[in-house]
Structure formats: C-alpha cells, structure tokens
Image (cartoon, rainbow, N blue to C red; front, top):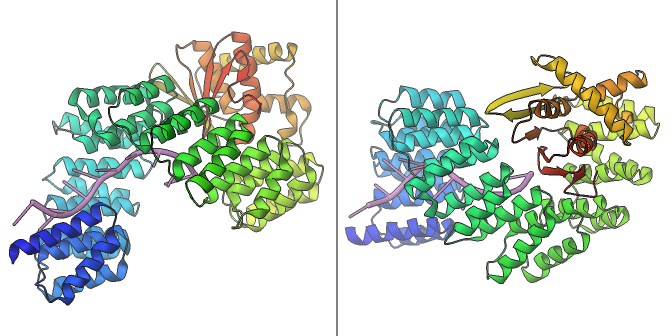
Length: 544
DNA sequence: GTAGGGTTAG
C-alpha cells in the first residue's frame, strides 16, 4: 500500500515536471474518489502542481486536507505550501505558514527567502538570510537569483564573491544565475571569469548553462564568442538557437540571424514564439522587409503559432522603419487585437522620422488615449508637434504627462575603461577630465562640421539661441562618454546608452562621424540593441 | 525516496 502511494506521488511529480500540472491535479482527484489513503507524500506533490499552474482553489483545498489529516507538522509538506502560496495567492499566506512552522529547516527558510524576493521584499529576504545560521548552496542561490530578479545585479555579484570567500562550493544553479546577472549588466570581465569557472567544473555540459553563456556573450557585445560557445555545445535545443538569433538581431546582423534561423529549421528544431520574435526583430532592425514577411507567414501558416502583441509590434516596426507607413497602418488595422502603447510608439517613431504628419497625428491621438507609462512616448509626440509647429498640441501632451504623473527619467550613460566604470548625465561636469572632454568634443564637432555634419538642433525644445542649442546637444551623456573613451584610447570601448532614443539618434549621427574621423570601430549599445560603427556607417545601415 | 534556487523575449 505504501509502495503504491509512493509511485502515485511520483507520477504526480513527473506530470508536474513535464508541465502537466492540470493532469497531475486531475489524477489526484481521481485517486481521492477511489478512497485511496492520503499521505504527506501525495499532498506535497499535488501542492507543487498547484503552485506551478497556478491553482489557487486547488492549493487551498490541499491546505485544508493537510490540516484535516494533522500533517501540519511535516516540514517538507509545509515548505511546499509556502512555495505554493507565494506563487498563487500572496506573501501574507506564505508568511503565515512559515511563521506557524513548529520547526524551520534550511529548505523551508530558503523557500521563504525566495517568496520574499518574488514580492520584491528585498531587504526582508536579505535579513532572513543573514539571521539564518544554517545555510547551504540553495540559500546562496536563492539570494543571488532573488537579487538578480530585483535588478540588484551588482549586489548579486557581491553575494557570489562572498559565497566564494566563505568557501561554499557552487553548483550549476549558482553559475546559471550568475551568468545571467553578467548578461543583464553586460559585465564582460566578470562574465568571462565565470565562464572560465563553468568550464573548469564541467558545468557547460548542462544545457541551460551553455545557453546562458551564449546569451551573456551576445549581450556583452561579443558575437564571435557567443558563436564559439554555440558551436562547442554537444547538444543544442531551441533556446540555444534562439539565443544566437536574438544576439544577431540586437547587433543589427539580420542576414546572420536569418541564416541561423534557416539552419535551425534544417536541423529539425521546431522554432517557438520567441524564436520568431527574435528573427522578426532582426529583420526589422536590418530593414529586411521581404524576409520579415516570409518569417511571419512561416510562423502563422507552417507552425500555426498565433501571433502575440510583440510579433505585431515587430511587423509594424519592420514595415514602418522601411518607410512603408501605409502598409504598416493597414496591417495594424487588420490585427484581431487592439494595438497597445508600445506598438503605437514604435509606429509613431517611424511616422515622425518619415515626417508623415497625417499618420503621426492619427497614431498620436490613439496613443494618448491609451495612457502609456513610458515618458519616451510623450516626448516623441511633443517633439513631433513642435516640429510640425503645432504648439497647442505640444502643451496638451505636456499637460497630459503632468496629469498622469509621468516623469521623464534622466538619461545616463556609462562606459567601462580598464575595469573602471565612468557614468555621465546630460551636461555633467563632475568628471575630473570634464574640461578636456568638452574641449575634445568641441574639436570633433568642428571637424565633423567640415565634413558635412549638421547638428540637429530642432530636437532641443528650450527657447534658446542656435549656439546654445548646439552646446546642449554636445553636453549629452553619450557624447561625453564617447569622448572620454576616445581621449583615453582604451583597447575596447563599450558604451551603454540608457533610454531616450531621441537623443540616441542624434548621438549616433555624431558617433558615426567620430568613428570616421578617428578611423576606429565603435560599439554602442542603447537600451535594446547594439550599433556597430565602422568608417562612419552603422551596421543597421538605413536608419541613421 | 517529497521541498527551495533555473537558460531565450519583454
């Protein structure tokens, strides 16, 4: 009898692991109807299934059964409940179960730490970790991955270092979390060191770790290394291929992305919605309209994947960037769902750069009805109205922004030179070399002007004279960072440009000229993708 | 022999 109970619990666990939680719960219900004896093993397995679904009602029913059978002293079972509540209902329920535990062990505490991180209670989670004397790898992993998911990347790396100092041995989960952290903040130096550790321990054979390494190198701007990782992998899955495709897409390397996609299909790997998203994204940033349509049709007809909003956004972006604004508009009209703020912002951006007043006004009005949360959308629209000379509309947009409590985040840029990070804000003069930087930039601008650079001062909204506008353009964080990079002549320049694409456009115009003058290659990254400049030309070609 | 920490997009 006991043996059968064990195998039934296993069956539920297996179904859950395969993502068949619904079936797992149904199986449990059938078992109940036959009057089978309920054990803590069975309840623990079914609770886990509820957490994965998530199934609130089923989860609460399981909790009732736990109490009814007096199993609430079983730590393992109660741990499953903590995890289930933190995934299905809320932190209060999870905390109640944790507080009522007669005895806590490492795993129960780790589950609680993860639960707190899930609700962004970062300090509470850290506090619990610090007051707990008994820790294992899982405790450290919970903290590192929890910090990573709460945008505390540097702190996550700090805890990883502390973990090593305290002599705790790492495992695959640690490496997986830490590689992803490096990918998020494009920390190439750390990433390479950690990848070295991965190889040393033989963890790269574990597929998710290999995939994370591909992603990390791609996000750090090293597509050659990403490809090397990919080729070295014995087994590859759809995520390995997708990571490579997405990497190429972000670098504006559309042809490589398409070649990879075709090779993947040829190998018999079935692409998923993210693969298609990455491939379409690559097409849109390389201006490959025909190929984009081919991929989109392939997704819908050959693989029967129903497009989600992101796919539609990619298609509208693809068509609009290429100047096919009317085609993009009719595509949007035919969509079975209403476009969201992101999609409209992408469309509006192209309407503005192609100066299509009629469509921009139309799309702009739709966008404002939607209450976008991104300040960039309002800035885009207000700048557009200013260019079109419609000052009343400018005021309207600004007022809306104010009423909705949307604040424009201050854009900043950082550049890493010899392992030291320098960050800049617009007009920033706090850097010790700021005098040299501005002087250097001034010289570059003069040189740029002599070979045809026209500063786009129409983007400056303040009512000041032309010279001041040019100075303001010069004082943007990206340019300061680039100039510092050029003054110091580091071997590698990596520039992160955060938010504010409007500034980026102008910045890149200038960056292009700088690289032309200096005869060097510059890799810049904005919030979503990389731009390679060589001889004044950006790899995504048609957009600058 | 059950439980926690998990790779691609956004």
